[in-house]
Amino acid sequence: MAFELPKLPYAYDALEPHIDARTMEIHHSKHHAGYTNNLNNAIAGTPLENQSIESILKNISKASMAVRNNGGGYYNHRLFWEIMGPGAGGEADGAVGAAINKTFGSFADFKQQFSNAAGTRFGSGWAWLCKHSDGRLEICSTANQDNPLMDVEGAGCGGTPILGLDVWEHAYYLNYQNRRPDYIASWFNVVNWNKVNELFGK
Ligand code: MN3
Image (cartoon, rainbow, N blue to C red; front, side, top):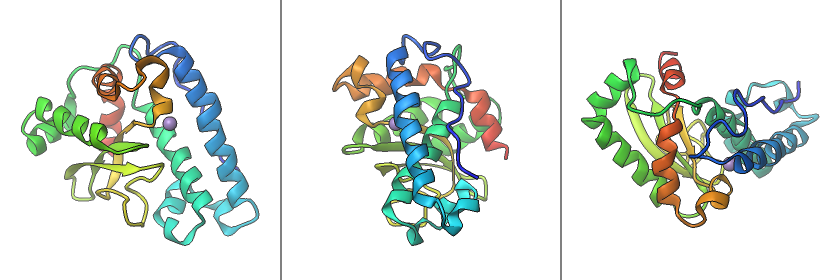
């Protein structure tokens, strides 16, 4: 079973003005499509072909760099589209809001720590909020298309990502150029906390 590029759950222009339609279109239809196709090519005819993406990532140390880069890219972007949405943003509520307050002290403190993780990631990568098996939350960042599910050095804090922010230049350069901090601040206006709550509850 080949992996499929997931449909965006909203229109390309739905996240404007925070993320522009052209960036969304290229990011989804070119970048994410590319990771998906390259992942399928890299696992074709191998035992990985019949595994879930989570299973592949949890054993990625045994796979090729092509599977690591494109499998990460496939998974990371699939999560990224889901945890954003129109008419979203604001402070986290529900169970994840309570867990954030408990772990980081306040939503403002969480936002600052997460923004710092995203802003200080050198080069291309991601910032993550992860849930550990005991329910604990943790913030980390990873390079390239790595993520905390992977069993490799540099995979961040471990646990399961419930929120991820793409800080590759392709995610923001058209609108923000080199101003990554502005992109990060604006991105908080499109975070779909309902979805993050759903992932937190799993
Ligand atoms: Mn990307």
